[in-house]
Each structure stands twice: as C-alpha cells, then as structure tokens.
Image (tube, rainbow, N blue to C red; front, side, top):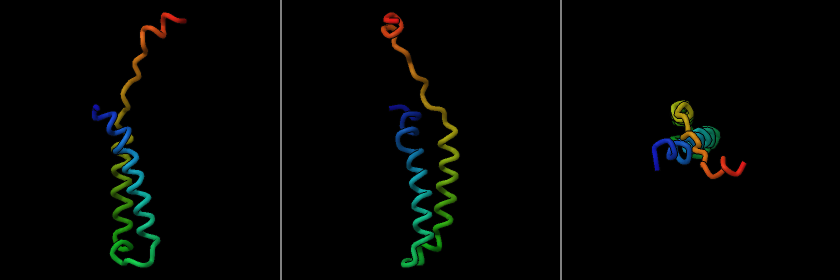
Length: 70
C-alpha cells in the first residue's frame, strides 16, 4: 500500500473524524478538559484535513484488455 492510498483510505477520513470529535468535545457539558480543548482539536483536524486533501490520489491505470474490447 502506497502513501497516497493510505492517505485516501485512512488519513483524510481520520482528519474529518478529528474535526467531528472536536465539535463533540466543544458541545458536551460534562468534562471540562474536553470542552476546554475542543477548539484546539477542531483546528488540529482542520489543518490535517487541508494537508491531506492537497495530496493527489493515485492515477487510475486503464487495462489494455478493456481498450481492446471497444
């Protein structure tokens, strides 16, 4: 598995989930520690998403057999 495949499969969705977790941390009223660092988690997820979304995915390779059929 190449880095670009890992980025598409794991890192980019992971950054999105970090942003969602930051929103949950910010909106929950029970644990002050999570509420205090909710915005920091959102910003960290946003920066991670910006970086991972700028990595281009692997180019798709067309099979020669498909070209011969048409």
